[in-house]
Image (cartoon, rainbow, N blue to C red; front, side):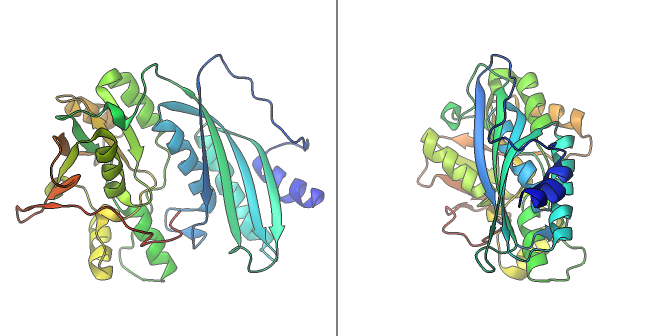
Length: 319
């Protein structure tokens, strides 16, 4: 196992030859943020990414939306007996490239091999550490009536890309995952808006609906969104219609929901466009005093109706 780890894991991740049980991190005297996540996506490779790049992006984004600059990630691999070495190496090369692009160090890890059938090829667990960039807390508890809601890009891309790949749906064009790091966008919003930035959340499992329900519950207010303003690509809309799904509930891995103080949403869009002039970020609604439903949507036909909270896991193993 020691030789296997050195030849096929450490070498791919540029970890060096040392196999100590802990990593020593030299950090400035700042507050730290920490997150942990597990990745069991099926299939391992999908349009726009794979489980390796996804593990980095998911971990980085959980830190970034909390106002932290990601600095280091731990990596634990659970491998199924008989896993092809070439597949593992492809995943690890992608993971390493994603970490380098985010300027994040893979600092420690662990590898276990289990009998056939105990896992599906490869599972990954990460823990991420970052330094907080702000002295004010980013929290849904900050949300106030009148605050405006922004989505940073088209919704549902990741979930539909994975689902179409899993079911071998040969749609043309096929949805492509939005899996990407959000740390630059989050840092720019912190710098550009200060305390007028209430909170951010990457809209993963359960899509933007899950985030909106969490915010409504935490703030004891309601979230009102407008369907006509929500960016959805033609390929995701078509796939959702074919499969009877609502994009509001479909997972994202490079798209976040942002709450900003009243009259600061235009500034937030300007900040995002400075980073990416082609961004499809949009103002999709606002926070309102508590209604009979925590989340409501004005549909294209004009009716204002409740948005149900996601129940269970309609799309399992999406991340």
